[in-house]
Image 1 (cartoon, helix red, strand yellow):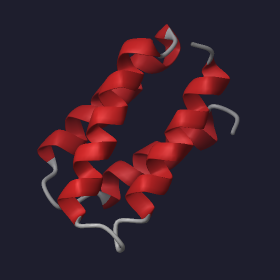
Image 2: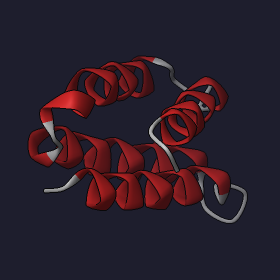
Image 3: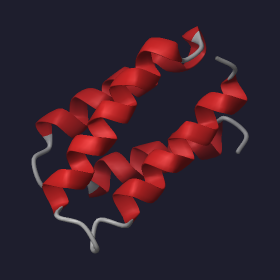
Length: 81
């Protein structure tokens, strides 16, 4: 998978987490965690560490997805958007 495809999927995860008002919170977190888990397996080596840290934080954050969302946005911005 290319870096561009990876960042496209990161945008999809961000949208999922931002729209958690329409879905139950745990549903969004579970979906985002699954997508991140798959992304870590397929992402380029330069992004694997950051994505795995964010995935771990999402799993351990409980209801606080704000920090995860901010980290994903920062990653997207730092990688050239």
